[in-house]
Image (cartoon, one colour):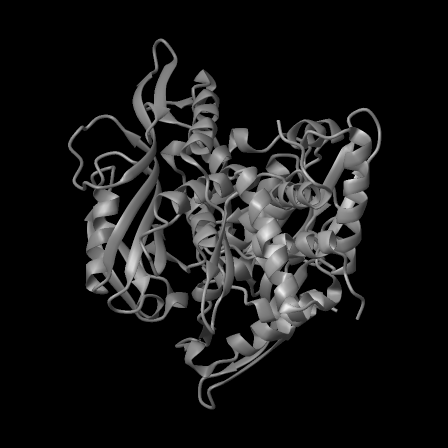
Length: 269
Length: 269
């Protein structure tokens, strides 16, 4: 196998780490793949770390010991997150987004893979110390940011479904009061979450918090602990939500259908 | 601003391209970001291309002209795709996946961000010449592979929903016969697809193809042309599907509940 030059090895290394966020890759693996001694790989990693940190493209963490190696965390700084959220606010304030009933059209944002990938990295940055085992969301609109958070954190995504589906096998279900005040059922496949796990809940929108409350109740059926909750947007009113302790990337203060104005600000600081 | 060494610049360059698949990034942008002359950046790009192609990590394409630059395509080779699909077959053949009614439990695969990211790259490789404007899927289970395909191709994802939702604004709906022989409605927000667009349909599972057929009918309401259809798994029976011309990554030949065996093979060759 051909020998690579230093810069070629470093490029390959950063590409592989970057394609596999939050996964430990051993020095042995790199050593095989790049046909170089472990000591050489170690130096390459130092070079990669320097540039990644200098340009604020994330973090490279070293895991010591026999099973050790390195992993790449696609973390955003608070400054980078705020810069993104301010641009998103500007985009969302466009009056043509107002939908009768004072809703905001944001399906295009949730279908923009680039934007939801960044949102996933912001959530991953917020919850990086939580040692979570799963990301959990409820169909439909939370799924794209949730899978991107799962990717950034390298943990599985579990999707709760409204009603029961034959392709899920045995399910556990709870009833909850939806945003539109209807009693609904949400279910999760019994085999999808191990008892005693730590989970992070991700959703697109929160008003009073009843859907998130439903997800929390469902998690307690799995004896799972909710260690974090993240929503892309929450409304300023009602001030009192049925859940506390959540991260909201954006706060929606007001949608005025008459004057066609939307007031929305970044929610993290 | 500090000057970077060659290997540092190449690392940064590959990291940025890799985080922004299929997006044209101009030499000017790199030149500013990395504080180096455009001629230097050109050489760095050649170095990056060499290693990316040598290790089969994708392709770097040069776009000439005033608006030109480079873009990174996260393409997988047929060999890499098959290797992944063979591993996936082994995983899916596990008898504990059989669900009464001869279904296979695969929600865990659809919630594994790493696996769906690879699936997205395979679809992007299959459809790279199609010049599509949108990826379209139907809730729920196709969403995770669909957003990853959208990310790899750098085009928006549009999600058709069963029934009508207040947060979508004005929608266009069609009726279709679902896999369970029920007449259902699927809708897409009117503003989400421009007339005359080219779309690629992505879904998780196809039996006779009636859901895909419904999506096709819905697209014709938008005067959109379906230029490709990709499903993760299709059944060998019925042999005659209501649609033709689709890519199926896996073919499900048989699920035998009595002997607890599943026969499944890669569908692309």
